[in-house]
Image (tube, rainbow, N blue to C red; front, side, top):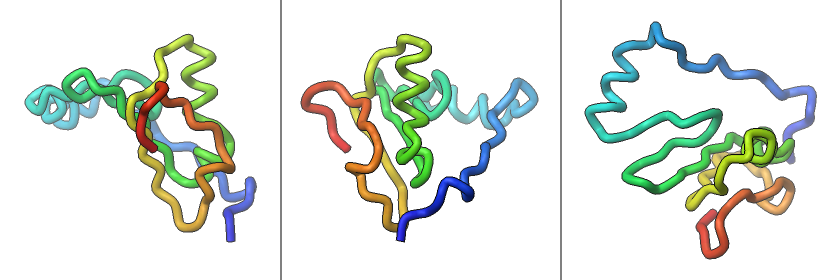
Length: 95
């Protein structure tokens, strides 16, 4: 069964106080760009968790801030159909 909208929860974003996390990301040539997008060696990777995908969290973020589409979209889920949400990937990108 797919989760209901009532199960939607907000995640706490990283801030400047998370110094160890930021240092680790920098050492591995990884940059946190914005909500749900990580750039690794120039590859834009979108990450969504189940209901985030259904409600279009990444899609809305990309269109609201006029950001480029992602090259790779990772969706973790326990039953969510990929077709249930928008897939903001470049032509030829991978979901």
